[in-house]
Length: 505
Image 1 (cartoon, one colour):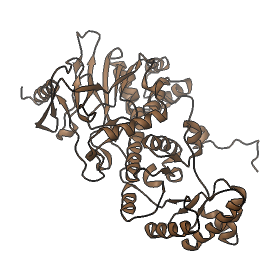
Image 2 (spheres, rainbow, N blue to C red):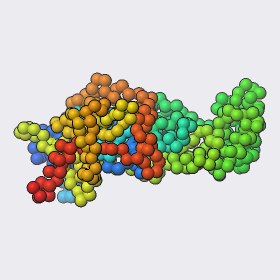
Image 3 (cartoon, helix red, strand yellow):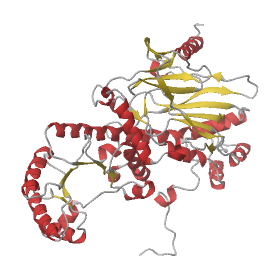
């Protein structure tokens, strides 16, 4: 027993991890830069930042935007409480003196989020260099939001994309997300479950995620249940007595074929009492062979509708292989390799300054980040993404353009990685602009996607998007490259800025 007269150490306890204020969920350099802006007289400077990624994850042909709702929630809660300020005041510089000035801390104590956010709605298929989110407002506020926005959107976008690939490999058969026990901590497990549902999984084993997001939850029993009893048959019988409406028996604890026989025996008893055997689960061994044999046995015993669920380190490639082998698996339980994005654990999204405007400026001053690698050179300006649609409804290309320049009439897109690759989008093509108003001066825009989009609508957007692109975009290996480029005037301005910065003009 715990002696109630003594305080339990709270260091690292989940109940102490999430406080009402999450404004310190940032890297220290965001705060040191913010003080630098403050001390340099830049507090009233306006800025535009773009959040984007440079390469599709998993060597795929598309990425699923996800995490906007959580990102907006974090933005709305920006504000440093007294505990935050006291903690920051305690941080010392290399000289042993306070790192942050009292004047700057007083400024932070009155800070609230008053920026504009334009974003691509969750569930939209997106591509490299396109801004998923555009933040406009106070330079200090925009800077302070960088880390939090990236950690939320990077992870959820990564998992939603992985889920969409796994679901595609399953070819219409339900996929269950089973990854909580292997996820990257509490928040990783919750966020992964939501993002996987966005990507198309049918349900999750994560009960808290089910409660928080209204997602279906699924699960049966583990090997420990079987091992607890003197025999496998007894364990199945006891489970059937306790949960007659949820009988999916895990049959591989000792011998899988014998386990299927025991499941059939108990299934017959269930049927006699007015219940049905829901199915069996395979969690080890040769899943192709075992599922085929199990299907024969179940069908011969009159359990044609009993489902065969498979788990055991599955991913999109394993599922595709099993299906090509004729495996008789109806439902796929995917855990570790989905919820941790096992083969690529980070998206690599970035957040770059694209323009600034000081009170004394007549207009926006574009900014660009250079690099020896062309892929790391950022795009300047107040960017928008326009998606073009053929008469048949297929998406045929995306153009990134500066809203100040527009993109009316015929538009020439230029591949920023290869200026010789160009494509003309004619004025007769239908189009839609992807970045939508979400917040204005810190307030949610009425009718914005964050307010109107349910999880089911977001999931439907993923399905509709996948159907609207060339089928080659969905390929797991060597996918078709969907055309995405800069509008010609934007490309030319970017080129001039690069040459000027390098002293060539």
